[in-house]
Length: 426
Ligand code: PLP
Image (cartoon, rainbow, N blue to C red):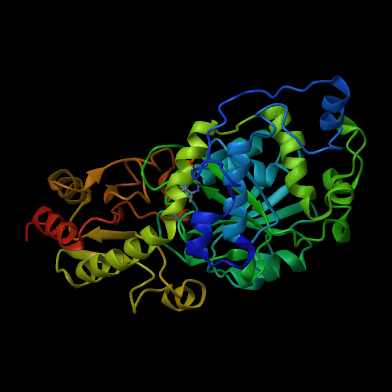
């Protein structure tokens, strides 16, 4: 039934379809394990020869239903929930990379991902070259090496609000025989489906708009099923040669379009863990049910707030792709025609203290290390999320030291504007 539904309906009806007499809301199966009457049946599950549940780290009905919903929203063939967005980005890359490999990433990405790629994965022997997403195709091409295994970017960057030219990135990735991985956290599949523009794998921090109520930390990896791993078999031995640690299975062969997803669960979840608690997936599902409605309101509120800040004399600059004169407006019109998100970046005239004084004067708007929530919230990345980065790294990540990240919620927009006005001394 859900195959023909549009996105707002998929938010409500996909993933879990109750049968006659079953609960209308997704049940929480908060159980680590599942009972079988005989050991042969259990053995078939371990051999991946039969579908079924045996241990929640590998699969759980509540988690799977929510993963199916996100896969349906993105238009992917399979999805895996993770315990955080960080785990999702790590697994999306680590599923196809190993020590000695290399990736290319947009430099305009979340500070945590920047650190993951630039510092932590380097310790595992995986190197990353960061490139400006605005660089020419030739410049980005020059970052590729024979051992490059993926290209990575964010649909809308956190915190700079730059829109990724997904088609350009997909073209470059595919010319090099590697998949494009896009973190679609800020746009959500309501406003952009990267697979429709050639992206191969999508990741999410479900902690953000998908949950929307600041109740759970989570992530998701979604596969389009479109990347032809065997066409580049020499680059992806993990998918295209037998896995001796899993009965000699060749994932891309045995599972076809589900090969990448199956490998992620069978290898990475088996060995590293990082699943969400079913209780958290239930909370995430409640958020997903209203995602389309909330995104509409986030975008209309943000458009009004961005225009207000744009016209206010206290404001030195503002980046919001919905504004006509924004650098990314043309890309937003192409990739985000129904709205981008509620997040914007701006700077106040004055010094660093002006930003701090403004934030401390806000009454309704919260200072939190969070973004993309139904409450309007604000953060100064140079003092908070990105404080581990050097000035040079801040510049590379497109984070100005006066940048204030404002995440516009779904309150009455007049109250949001009133609070901003009084905090700026209007
Ligand atoms: N990706 C983006 C775009 C983010 O904004 C964040 C967190 O802010 C993450 C990934 C990491 O997600 P999490 O905090 O759920 O680990």
